[in-house]
Length: 460
Image (cartoon, rainbow, N blue to C red; front, side, top):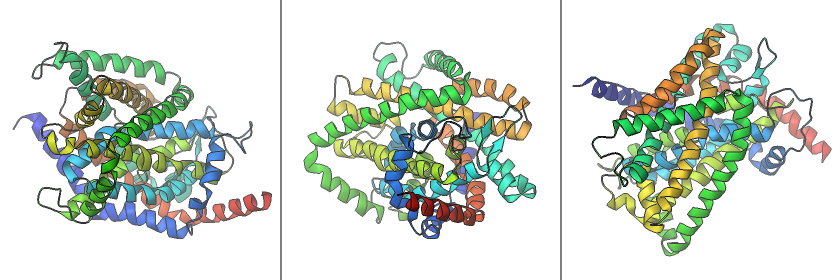
């Protein structure tokens, strides 16, 4: 067995081991615990959360680096990535339509999880020697639980350094560019595309380098412009697909629900497989309980941790309940998931759009994936660099960025199965310290939220 195949087997077995029943119980069960622990209160304040994003209640002298809107956009630019397009396609290909239902479940309980993790990220954030403020599970663990819990914080930071690497985004963007542009123009063949992949990924790495030079400020500024554009454009295309297949909408809903509890669309008909794939892909998509997005929310300009928790809970709604559902309906309504047997990942979504928009559908998706990939790559760099600095101090920044950019290039030329296994395994590893610390410190969030909502009621 060749070395790449050995790595592929190792990472996928690691991912399967990590994404077993205990982790599913921790993520979904933990989310249910937060829902009950909070008495479902955050779910009643979506309107208030939107007002916070729009800039109400914000003060110029609030501590932090970026406004609520940029913090949410930065977090979303990390989650609104190829998990919404390629990840959903993989979920349907491997787990059947029923996996989408379990992605929805993960998002609904993820609302409360994000409320807790983001609130804690602000509550226990860290200020460096230059006066910059940062947050994240590693600082929540150290500042909230104590230094004796350092191994748990180090576990998160170490896994995040790997999980934040841009290999999945680079792999899928280059694959789509190859399918849409290179092969039709004979710039790369199906079997010999190494040079093309290397050239394109090097160009992407250069663009990422330009953006990340400005660190969180330029990332936030870029994200707050790119994310709304991506969401609106994708919703517009989905509405057209739904409109042209309106007679099939109810049957697709019925298929998702029935398959979620039967597993009939999966080889072997395993219900456990459907649930596992749905939860795995849901967590990969919206990152609720993973902990990375709370690193973006931890930089928000606010004195009230609960405010950022409320802003953060909008993430799973936008990311999974809206964007992932769009991709699922595009694939299921067009029927390509049953006919395109050899297509996988982002290519399946491309074929679905191409069947409705034969002239420009694939080019629209290429534009979307380009923006999604770029925004995710720059945000993930921020997560990775903060983890490297936490573990190694200032020298972590000097070595992590070159490695990050080099692996961005390398990620385009390795197999999707290898990349998929690596990212899923490290995401599962990050979830363990994130959820343990959030559950451990949940009484702090409950006390702070009770006080915040009481003051909010008194003001209104």
